[in-house]
Image (cartoon, rainbow, N blue to C red; front, side, top):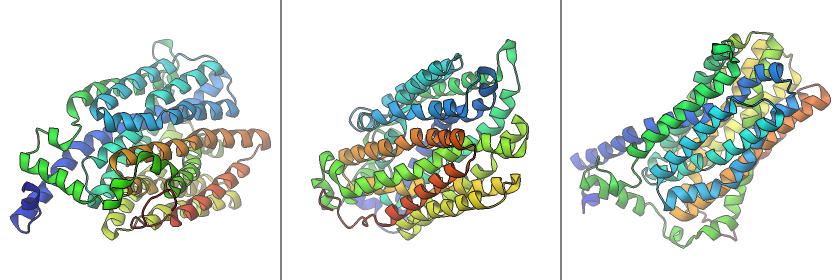
Length: 436
């Protein structure tokens, strides 16, 4: 009854709009901050490497493996992490995950050998595994189809903003040696503590389901629950978690994610090092100049999510940023390697991440809750394998050849293949099934 009332025209329609805004204002800013903290802790090795290589004598191959080994354990716990949020409690799971990973990030500042670095990154990956797929599933508990792209872009825009904040912050911390301790060690400590703090806050702030939200009226609670239920096609009720794992559509999404993540993680981890070697700039200047691609990514991500929701189209909105990255990588291979051109082309490559909010709207629009949680975990697990493969393969190829060209070629091939897979994915009205 309440949901029907809120769906009427006039004042009732305004009430529905108010409910949607209230949910967005309550949840998205906080989740946005959590994801900034998450990405700062996941990628701070990219800037720590600028000084660790000198202090500890680590080669590019060591850093490539250190960056990538994070994803071995990260991949293994994706599906359990997503199901934990779906079937247990989002606020409890997210709180626990953040406190553990924050503590492990602080401890990473104690490493002295390559083996210790590998171990620290491995256990950090295990700790962070459930966060991203868990939040993607959590958003589907609250946001209707019309808002999925925008909510995803508002949450995932934390990725570029974390680099906008993290790049100059890391550059500044690296040149300071407080209490006789190297700056790169302080980098891990100062970026790990916020995760512990916000993890504790998340336990009290987040609400698992609309019916538990004391900050919504009873009428608003019933409208959200009814609206989400109405948007499930009948066929979604027959799609089990096992069907999702066998679905060709889900497997196509997983393959596309792997190829795009190969491009994304390779560029994120190696851009600071490449920029410093091309330009010869100081760590501080590299930190400031390094924010340029991520400002562009922030804008592109919001626009892409908004325009996809407006048009109702997903596949091409996910594919076009990836195709653009392929063109930019061709430029990095064939054009002169000046500082300005390197920054411009890497800006386009990094902006491929604007595919994320559109991409992650797809599985939650196709599947039931448990099936969607399973699919999100599987897709992110397969994609995250590239978090290991990308940085490591790029570092390995550079060590073997002494040139970045072979790494750029590998990234370009992955970008083209990912875009082709994305445009070949069936539309949502073509049902997800094992025989699709």
